[in-house]
Image (cartoon, rainbow, N blue to C red):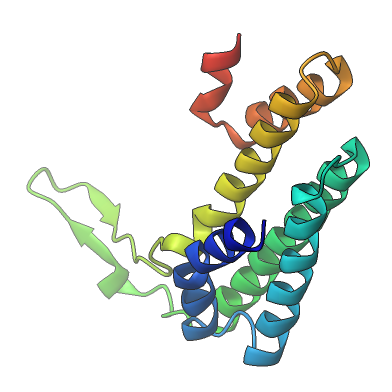
Length: 155
């Protein structure tokens, strides 16, 4: 049991490094995230995990991802934006003006790892509780909200 939990925690090291490198979380906050995730993983690996254990873990992962997104947006807003002047507008060959797009924040592993982790927990929960329609509807609703292609596999 401990080996499985350790393996799942080691798989998230790239995501945690990315969160720290981008300045979204401090090292102390990440240590707390790892501690909480370890606790949840052990709850899911016990002899008879409850449906509430899965749902609590999913709720926690969604809160962490929402906080990550909120901090990411705050950092993007805080970065100095170039003023909209003539240099931002170019004219192409046809004489039409077009605006240059500036890439403010490149996508990285931490941008999609949270959703993938939630999908993985939902997958484990639906395997464990196959006949629970409420759980399946929550899973499908999450896939629909995130626009994830995994929803096509279950319909």
